Length: 119
Image (cartoon, rainbow, N blue to C red):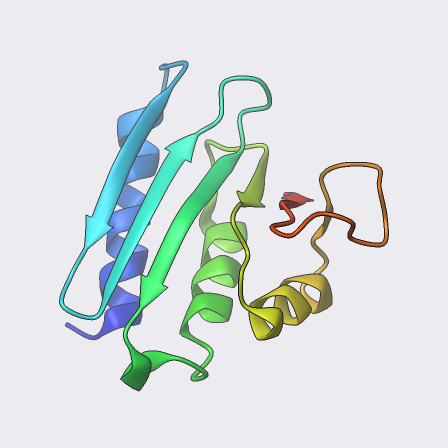
């Protein structure tokens, strides 16, 4: 199974597990990535709290395709939130996908911005 198919499958499992529950979290791990996700209590967002993708898979659009898949197949979450953004390329990609700053202080004034998107 390729990485994108694996992530799509894991999202489906996590989403169905969250139905009817206020909070949930999970670590999605493979040889190619480690992603910590959770359902946020205050807004019902799908939160990507931490993500590490191996070098060979970076820059290939996998995260972008996964986020678009989440938007297309979401039935449980009110939006998507991405925390702890250390990578400038990821930040630019998320902004192009329509994510906005969670806090009102725009432009970014914190080292690790949090972005959100209502879906």
